[in-house]
Length: 423
Image (cartoon, rainbow, N blue to C red; front, side, top):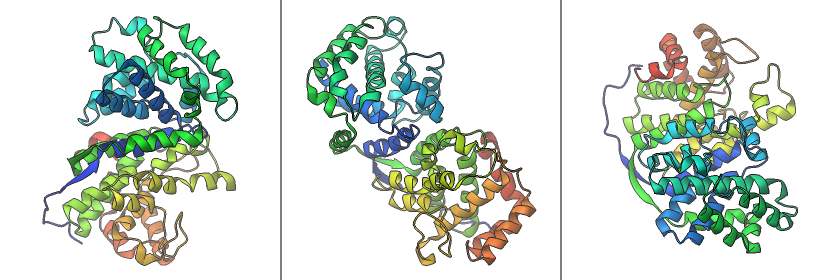
């Protein structure tokens, strides 16, 4: 099938940026595996401090969003574990730099880049850095909120109220060293109320997030803007394991190529690319040792991995305006004969967009070296795809498009990020 020659103007769509940030922040918290509310609690503490400081509603909203995504540079569960268990450690600023680089050029979030870059910088260093007073204040509020949650994390669900005085005392010891005095005082004022601590328990923290999400921030954005945001999160997912580096980026590039060759409109092709960039968001909750395992997975490990596409769907479906993208991404392990996961819909419920992403995902995974096998050749991959067609698992027409130029598909599937932009 020839590549479609007709080009369509892509459409702008209106999404609620705040809801998008909240939903995508869910994927960041998944890195914690067992502790999946760190970003939410940091956002909560930051807002309570801002209220005590008398900051305006816009500042409270910004701190809420910064708190949710402050650890956007963290992909590995081992790093997340260190951040939650240690007040200070040698490499804690590395993820701040990564986070800064990820969002500094993305206009809707660029204002948050410097607070994220400096959210582990002690006040005695931060106050002398050439930076706006607003950014310094925000960075130090997030720094304090982050450390409060680090100290509190072992006690949620047990005796958090009994430990509140201890936490306040520990934070107070770092006055003018780690934290600005006025910010410490704001925290101590908020912390006097037992409700401050109770609200951070698992069954209540979502109430805070829900209430804040009702403060809508609808903005008309282009698909290119959404694609940029999707790329940010694809980089986070792909950084989780050296064996899956560039996986999401390359699946997206291949899915886009197949969709264009199929003759779909440019708007749909870009939406497919966005869905493919985000298809593995749920893998952030898979422990590092499972993704990097050099050998066959146990039944338990396989069951953990098989939850990731459902996690992806649950995250994306919470963003109004991206419902179709959520389904396409969530269906990337479904099979036409209902042997896939997690939903097992009938074949007619699996759209052409979802079928394209599924085949692009299979092709790229087979082309990429994994800890338990070498990368396969284009010929070997086509043989596997054709066998899956014969078994009724994947779409024959899409595989025939791939088979027209398997070398080109292989080039896209194994490209480096710099090459991808040229394809």
